[in-house]
Length: 310
Image 1 (cartoon, rainbow, N blue to C red):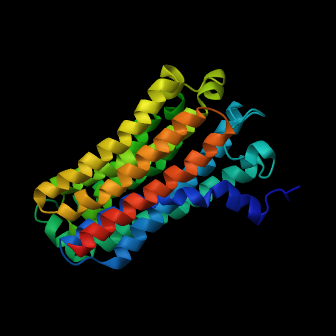
Image 2: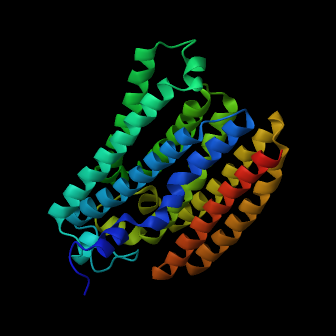
């Protein structure tokens, strides 16, 4: 029996294995920024810390609100949840969520201040004033923090989970990190952000594929809960293929190694898809989660490696 509100319980609730999903965008954006010139590594680390804290906050919010809604019952197929198992009390979870969000907001303020003092700001200030830049970044930080609550309390229950993942774990962190490091955006960043968004969402697709029946019975209508198993299998497959195609588009601008090396990713992704189809349902699909997380890490390393050696 695990001690209630213990350190081990909090570590399990934070789900550290999911942090790879938060760091894909920051690592890829930082590599592209390095390819285009020098970067301030302190700012890159702040972006990574902010993304990690928001991933933890999202995990804790998901744990608490799914428990309060009764989604995490005895028939849950995924990893055990802290509130549902009684490892962490709801009141303690509320305090933990508040603490993590406050820490994330503080890091966000640090990013804003650091950016305004960095060479990248000189580039952006040619088109925007200091107050305008501060206002935009403040709104982005507030939107990301608010998005973590919106995803769990509404979005994931009404088929918007994938769109929110695209936005808050793909486009915003990828474009935001690059903007902080370089002070500008271009089509390469948007193409890379699209690839990242698709890759990161494959993890959510596996979760929703595994939980499609229990989600439906609990009133959680994800896209796969609505449209069924076959849709989920095609959705997973094409997300990975489209991510590779987006990465390959960077070859049109001279980044040929990105399109070549990420072939390894799409081969791994297709192999994982075949395993997912073969298993079909049940707790055995948790192994596909691990394989998908591995694929995400592989994609990140391949993109970073390709951009660094060109």
